[in-house]
Length: 79
Image 1 (cartoon, helix red, strand yellow):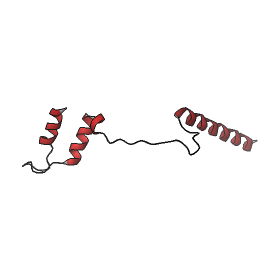
Image 2 (cartoon, helix red, strand yellow; image 1 turned 30 degrees about the horizontal axis):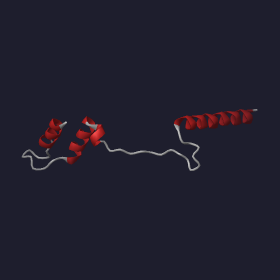
Image 3 (cartoon, rainbow, N blue to C red; image 1 turned 180 degrees about the horizontal axis):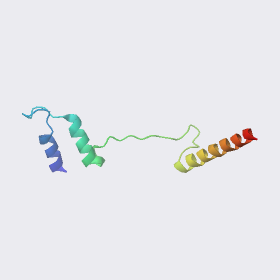
Image 4 (spheres, helix red, strand yellow; image 1 turned 90 degrees about the vertical axis):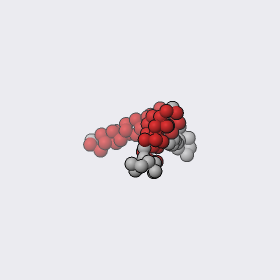
């Protein structure tokens, strides 16, 4: 990894005389090559306030129930 870091520091300059590093390009390059060390990490918590939507299986089951209820409602309206 040190070689890539060295290359990033010496090869990603905004000017031809090498006096100003392009920080956005360096950051993106390092994140692509070494995601575990340089990736920006964010987590999204999808748990509802009452804890009922704590995992993917329960969200999928709830969505299936909502869709089934909507289908039944639509059929009832058509009759």
